[in-house]
Amino acid sequence: MPQARGQDKIALFAESETKFFPKVIDAELEFIKDDKGVVTSLVLRQGPSEVTALKKWRMILIYWGQTKNTRL
Image: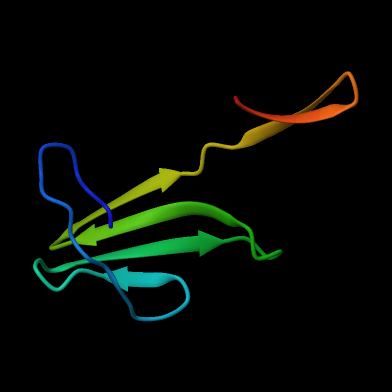
């Protein structure tokens, strides 16, 4: 369940594979995929507003034969 800062958690319901909506407010979340099917961003639509958030990518480091995920 997602939770906005300072607000209660709310349930999201699937409209499609990439679109979700809460029943308690008029809003929609959509995950945007590239041509390879990798999620690149998230769009929040609420009323007349639309906000896009880009995905924070992770870099794979190979260190002493081990793979580690590290935020960029």
